[in-house]
Image (cartoon, rainbow, N blue to C red; front, side, top):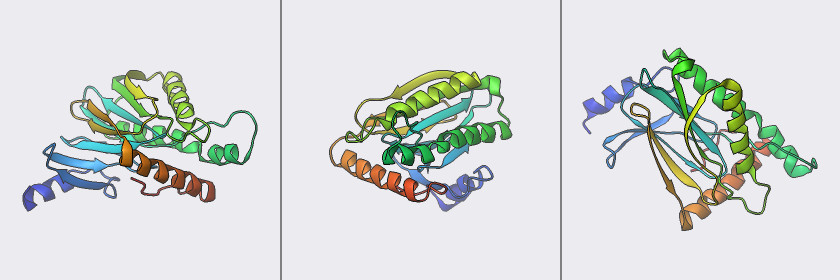
Length: 212
């Protein structure tokens, strides 16, 4: 990609998303925005939004009429049963799901989208932390309840399983590619997610740590 093309693509970023890391993906021949835990990104151009999920969940939300959309990445376990140390930790982190969904939807509406034209696809929520409570299942249950309460259309999902996954979303077309991760990639993501949860426990307000 030429310097002129790179500058033109960078200039097309919607206001408020200049901090999100973007790079040229030669395999897809397009610019790619990498969404990290605690982040979200909205695009009105022909580019890809990518993330990697373990027990976290991402919602890809798109306005069908305007062909613009975005992706978030959040961890929202909902503690149930005895309030032990682990439950207290995930409970403090739970609000990120509400924030992530509301901020993503509001950013799409601000860019000209309409609620009645929104379609949603959800991904992630794998049971990758086998020695702990099933955070992924709780994330999935949360996002489904949220969409039902907000009367938003769920058009596709790829959730659950025991492996992490890579998600690539093309907001212009609405197409999504997913790939399950195994072996060393899975091990590294699990280690990173455990570290992320510890950071949430110690500093649940920020929680914006690059993991993947």
